[in-house]
Image 1: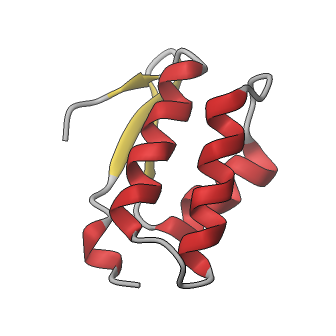
Image 2: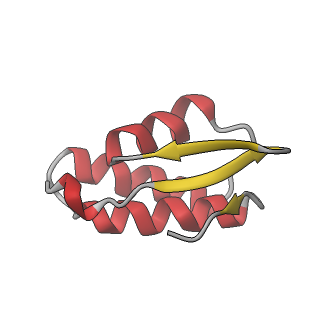
Length: 81
């Protein structure tokens, strides 16, 4: 897994509160232990893709894209990268 393929994802978690996720490990942790919204299908997919990256079965850029889709699904504001 090349972590350089996971550009930081910056998103708003509340009014004026920003969070930055810098790698698939952090994305997995956020999805599994800190997700504040009701999980939907894109959240489940993002979790699966992130776990697959940690196991060496997928690429880091796929985890990043899936994570952003889950954020969009949950109506988080994602800042442009």
